[in-house]
Length: 189
Image 1 (cartoon, rainbow, N blue to C red):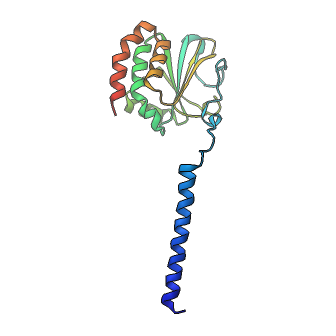
Image 2: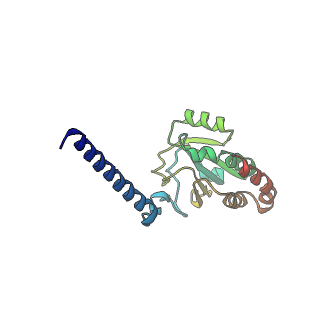
């Protein structure tokens, strides 16, 4: 067999191998069932009723009354995408709820991030998010004056979830007035 014949055979073999590989990938992606969803990796280990005392330094749960902890990261695109909701939430919480932002990054970096997003909070702390049971950002924890978690929300919330959060943080009447604003925010890119 001459060189031309050998090259032709090699090219045919390479084409067959590429076709087989592509077939395997297509079958795996489109025909085989997806791997089972493992929510334990995404869900926070923090649960309702968890005590927060000693987990976030510098927070006086009793003095604050109700505290909304925003567990965020400056490197989280879902946190940035949720910033319009956080601005609304902070504005509506008023004096009823203290807002504490907790970041794994240094406080000065967290301050710059919140300022650039226009989110004003009462307090910023640095903490190991894994230590407080937060496995993903953004996570919001509503904590009572005893330092006990009463509500947990994880991820970028859909509009109906945002409305529920506002209803819990504020009174139902105030949340109802916010619906047009939330709908406007939801339509923004």
